[in-house]
Image (tube, rainbow, N blue to C red; front, side, top):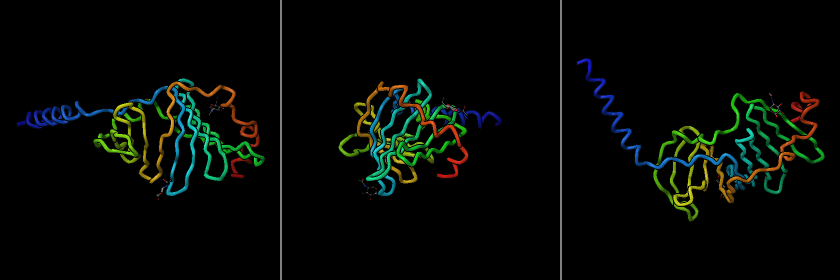
Length: 187
Ligand SMILES: *[C@@H]1O[C@H](CO)[C@@H](O)[C@H](O)[C@H]1NC(C)=O
Ligand SMILES: *[C@@H]1O[C@H](CO)[C@@H](O)[C@H](O)[C@H]1NC(C)=O
C-alpha cells in the first residue's frame, strides 16, 4: 500500500520526462551580442540598441523613443543601473536591484508551446511563466521576438553574435556620481 504513491510518482516522472525529451529547448543567449530591437508598448514605439555582455557583467539598452529622447539604461551585474541622458538636461537616476543582468540561460525551464509563423519566420515558441513568450527561428535559432505579458513587444531586427561595445562607451557620465540624491529626486 505504502509503495503506491512512489510507483505513481515514478510513472508520472517517466511520462513527463519522455514527453519533454523530444521538445526543443530555447538556445541560450550568446555571452556577448549586439541587437537592434523595435519595441512596441501599447502603440508607443522605441528603437532599442542592445549590447549584452555577460562576460563583463554588463548590459546596455540605448533607447530612442519615436521622435523623442535618446536615453541610456546601463545595467551592471552587481545590481546597479544608471538611467541617463547625454543632452543638456544632464539627468541621471541610479537604481539598485536585488538581481543582476539576465543570465545567458535565463530561458531554461520555459514551457514549449509549439511552432508559429511570425512575420515570415517559422518559430519555436516558449512561455516563461508569468513573464513572457519567446519566439526563436527554427532554422537559425536566432530570437525573432518576445512579448511580455504586460503587452510590451520586442521585435529583433539585427542580431550580431560576439559583437562587443568598446569599454569607454560603458562609462556613465560624471553627474551620475555626485549629487546622487538630488538627481534621484529630480527624475
Ligand atoms: C503596436 O501595438 C499596438 C497594440 O498594442 C498595435 O495596435 C500597433 O499596430 C502596433 N504598432 C506597430 C508599429 O507594430
Ligand atoms: C556596480 O558596478 C558599477 C560599475 O563598476 C559601479 O559604478 C557601481 O558603483 C557598483 N555598484 C555597487 C553597489 O557596488
